[in-house]
Image (cartoon, rainbow, N blue to C red; front, side, top):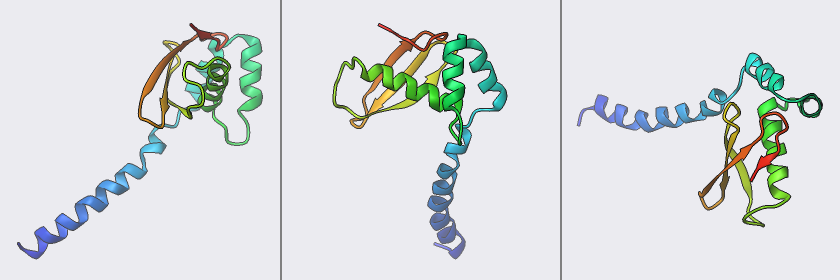
Length: 117
C-alpha cells in the first residue's frame, strides 16, 4: 500500500465525520418559511407562538414543543421520552421518536395546533 492510499484511507473517516457535524445547520428554516407558517395559524395561536419564539427559539421548535405538550396531555405510551423527529406543517403531520428508535406519527390542525385523534 502506498503512502498516498494510506493517507486517503485515514482521512476518509475524518472527512465523513466532519460532514455529519453540518447536518443541524441544514435543518434551519428561513425567516420567510417561518412567516408563512405563522400566516397559517389562527390569531390566538399565532400570538402564543410569537410570544414563545424569542431568545433564539425558532418558530418550528416552538410548534414542536406545543405539539409535544398536547401529546403528553393524553399519551398513548406514558412515561416515554419523546422528541420531534420531523414536522411537516403543510400536511399537519409530526413524527415523534422515542429512545427505543420507534416512531409515531401524529396529525394536527394547522390552524390551532390541536391534535387530531
